[in-house]
Amino acid sequence: MEGMEQWKVQVENWSSQLRELLHQFLQHVHQIPPAQLYAAIAVLSLTTLFLLSIRLFRRKKSNTIVLTGQGGSGKTVLFYQLRDGSSHLGTVTSMEPNEGTFILHSEASKKGKIRPVHVIDVPGHSRLMPKLDEVLPLAAGLVFVVDALDFLRNCRAASEYLYDILTNASVVKKKIPVLILCNKTDKVSAHTKEFIRKQLEKELDKLRASRSAISAADIANDFTLGIPGEAFAFTQCQNRVTVAEASGLTGEIAQVEEFIREHVKP
Ligand SMILES: Nc1nc2c(ncn2[C@@H]2O[C@H](COP(=O)(O)OP(=O)(O)OP(=O)(O)O)[C@@H](O)[C@H]2O)c(=O)[nH]1
Ligand SMILES: [Mg+2]
Image (cartoon, rainbow, N blue to C red; front, side, top):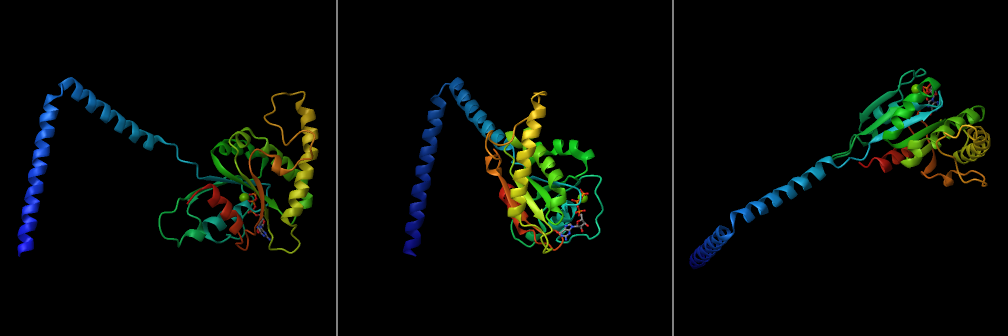
């Protein structure tokens, strides 16, 4: 009981002290010339507004991942595998880009808030090259899908396509990371990623010589590839170029998912 009484007295003490302080503060405020007071209030509210607008308008980092590569390399199968965890067997050559914003299928059971990924599958058809130019500036990362089964036959064409990507103004200036994905590794006859990387580097090196001969006449070419006088290697690129393996068909896509989550933070 006694403790209770003491506590009551204490609380009363505090509240009277608080009242006193408030009283002093108000008196103080009254002494400030109104002009100064308004100025202070104006400065305070402007700063608050400014800080709020910074938060509001701060550009969110892109969550767009672009899948591209030659026709038949397996982009559409990969797209469905990422979204639904199944390959939707029997896809046909895509004539229109496929796109969607979703949480990766493998993350569907994870708890907490996960940032969805915006995936665009741009078909390999040359008619759709302008589409690629349109989406590249938005990309947080680009996955270049290569058919590792039928690689040798397609090597030249794949390199030409890759050359255009690696010298694209947005890719170079924004340093868009590129993942070269050697797909269809479920088959034993698939080439390894190391082999594919070396072949692509060789082919790009050759292309560089022939393309720069052309662009000497037409100076308006965007960017050159690699270091002049040195054999081309992906490590010379301004942006990060890495190589990985996958099988869209059987759902072995962990390395692509890792790349996506490295560049689109969950
Ligand atoms: N063995 C094997 N076959 C695959 C794999 N991924 C795709 N394919 C097959 O390759 C063919 C082409 O796959 P798509 O996903 O349609 O290829 P795409 O890159 O979208 O082709 P376009 O739309 O023409 O640009 C299909 O017959 C698939 O079944 C894979 O990981 N392994
Ligand atoms: Mg397709």
